[in-house]
Structures are given as C-alpha cells and as structure tokens.
Image (cartoon, rainbow, N blue to C red):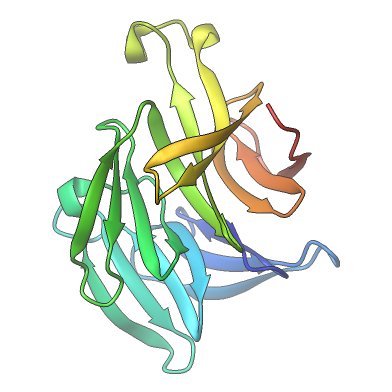
Amino acid sequence: MAHDGRLLWLAAPDERMVAAHDPESGATEPRLTYPHEVWDVCPAEEGVWLLTAGGKLDRQIVFWSFREERETLSYGCPDGAGSGLALYDEKLWLPHRHNRKLFCIDPKSGKTNWIVRTQHETFSPAAYKNELWLIESDPGPLAHWSDPRHARHFFSRYDPARETIIERVPVPFAPRCMAPQGSHFWYAELGKNGIARQAKKRG
C-alpha cells in the first residue's frame, strides 16, 4: 500500500493484481495483473515497483513500466526479505520482518547498500514526501509464543540518516499494511476486509 499524493495504490496477492484507489471519488481501478502474487506496490515515475513471488527465495523486486507495458527490471530479495517495499530518497527499503532487518537497496542494480538491525519486527514501509514510515510489531516477551493480547503495534517514522525510529504512533489493532498521507494514515487491519483511515495522532 502506498499513497502518491492523489491515489492510493493497493496490492492484491490472491488476484495477482495492482489497483489504484481514488479516495476523493471512491473509485478503484485495476492497473495491472502479474503472473505471480503481488505482495506490495509503490509508485514511481513511469511505472510502479512491485514486491512479488517467483524469485529464487520466493520473493523478488520488479519494476513495471506503464509506457512499455512490461517489467523492465527484476532481481531477488536479499536474504529472502519481503515484508513490504518503499521508494524513499531514490532508494528501495525492504524489511525482513522476523529477522528484524531493514535493507536499503539500489533500485537500478539491486545491490544492497546497507542493512540496519531493527528493535522490533518491521513491515509495510511506505514513503510520503520527506517521511519514511513503517509498521513496528512487538509480539511480547515470548515472541510469537506470547499471548496475542500482549502484542503492541505502532506506525513508526524512521530516520535513515540516524538509522533509528524518531516517532511512534501506537495503534490498538493488528495492522496488515499502512500508507501515510499528510495528517493521517491509510491502513488495512488483520482479519478484516477493506481499508480505513486514522488521524496521525502523536504518541
């Protein structure tokens, strides 16, 4: 999920499809179908970046050109990472949720520029203007064996220059994906259909 300033871009893995939703009109338009599941999408000039299945470790990054109506770049995800994809500062940001890593990737070559260790599990990164946000999840003291009621979730702003989280907005539900848009967030909740919006209240 990503917002480009006008449209909300959505990935539908089961349908192997990318759609664009206009929040003003409520209209949703399919933009492309792909041979494999599409797990995340982020818009760019002349096309979109896709996080899809089908790579060597079952995750790959693809650039789809709308002008050429085909993929023009593809490469595998490092370390099998694949918990979302964002384009920020002309770099791709790719989390490995359970290994608590955040990869910074050169879009043109697929080369890993650097790897950051994260305090919590992170996924669903999304950029809006000069901000990079992601979802943080702390499952509890026993990790995934913890009672789900002990889990904490945040919409968190990440500062790549300092390699740290600089802002956390706690949310009282388990999010599946998130995209910031100015004063609020778009999100989908785990176990529920549809998308919702929440004001960016500071935590």
